[in-house]
Image 1 (cartoon, helix red, strand yellow):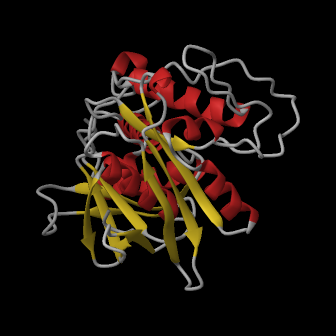
Image 2: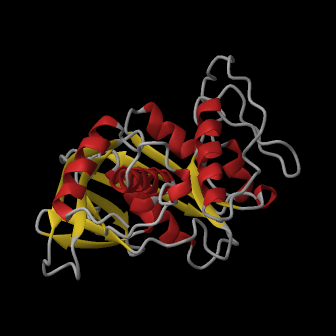
Length: 299
């Protein structure tokens, strides 16, 4: 642990994260030293940042005792001091956690205009093995047959591959089914069959494609099992609204054998995906011909 004053930690970390943002979509707002505040038991450094187009400002706090891959003295390059190693550890932690869904897993608490993130879950998936992903769109080839290869756009494959690598570093489970061979040079498809595999589960992808053709589609998500041969458990579509910073969940469908918590899993994922596109309030069907207004800040 570095013995430098907490103010020096904050100054060094601000410089480090300015030069080396931990991941794409991270926008540093401030790094401040917090000494004995009502929210902290000891001196800590608060990293204040924005994420993608998310309208909210987030805070993650770090103590001087943070342990990471650069904390080992034997791993330090010649001339590197403990403070530099600590900054590297914070950067690595932010990269790993943000790229594996920190904003969706963390506990949230509002402090003034900021949202403090803490106590992230140690797993990406629950015990039921369900996970949410984007429905691939305009892909050169998208096929879904139990027991056969699932082919995805190469950009999606790269993103999933990175998530798999980071998950393995944390000892988390991850489905290898998405890592299929994809022709990265193929031209984009016309999108006419996007989500066609959803129909095999009794869902209606055509409705979402029609919404997309109208220019209203923001997010199209699907709920999958770790075993891709089981097919999708549901899908949802988030669309634009006339009101600024507001979106609506226009499609929310589940398969007949979907788990009991599938609906909430879809809603939670839709809220986070919409927030990353700048949405502050997501309207969600309440099951009684009405809508619930969900604040994307604290979900």
